Length: 352
Ligand code: SAM
Image 1 (spheres, rainbow, N blue to C red):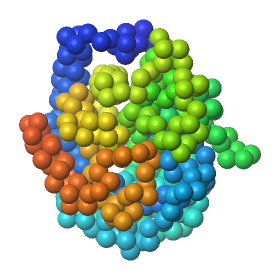
Image 2: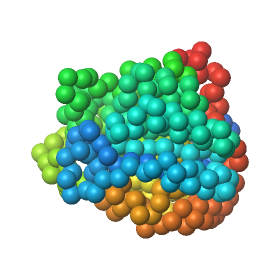
Image 3: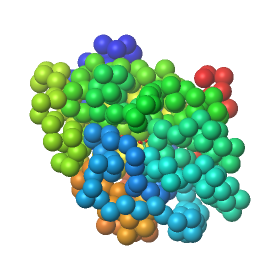
Image 4: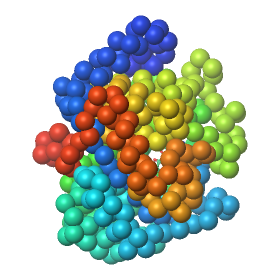
């Protein structure tokens, strides 16, 4: 597909045509990554953040928020739950928290690798080369870093760098690939100022980067953030502005599956936040093959509220597991076993 074709799909509202898009994406998903839905246990290990991303509820400037960093033993208890629940992967996510040091994180990764067979995915933001290399050497397998939007001017507007530094997530993803990580990225859908052409370019960028994992979700406005406060003025013209809707999210999931047939694609919490009843299932039926049940202890969940009314905030890890299993089985899919590595694994180094 060319850029024009992606744009046509993104603006399409014809239900019959869209039914064909869902069918095509679902068939490709079945052929390339199969029926199983893999479970990645998400542990939100710290909500401390030095960055001022204009869209994010845990950005440094949010003084209303109580901050936490989980101690190692608490993280290990969650890791053991992942093993008990037969998850193949733990995802360790945090704000850009420099209290998570190279040494501490390396020790934690080594311990998880020594005590379990889990794959370890990191999602810790833009960290130094030295840290990223050390964490790979300690045994981390994958790194998630959304580039948020491929429109550089829009990115600069919503994602200020640290003082005296540059922020180039696309360059960092290429570097992560070189270091040897499986790489995951993605964008928010419907950022004020994001046009259909931008979103089509985002999908082309997924393909160019040959991503192993693609996570997309609707931008959800947070009243305590600069973008939440000023979004009316920042929006593109009504003909050009991408809406931050559930329907648009399904289109991007389906188009990402067609553009990158082998990628692991989650049906995300942001989507489930817009449609708690069936959002996850519809994402899985329209190209996705991953879900990320939350393992974060309940006492921390409300403090990791990157956007309001985030799905699953009142649940325990056991609730999340039961709910995901029920949803997966209800649509005739199987719960994946094993690590659910990218089919690109092994081919990635040549492709990079
Ligand atoms: N600090 C790490 C980073 O920046 O990659 C990981 C944590 S960050 C909170 C994870 C993701 O949350 C971001 O990449 C962004 O896409 C998403 N996010 C933040 N605020 C959001 C919002 N208001 N609506 C939807 N997604 C949001």
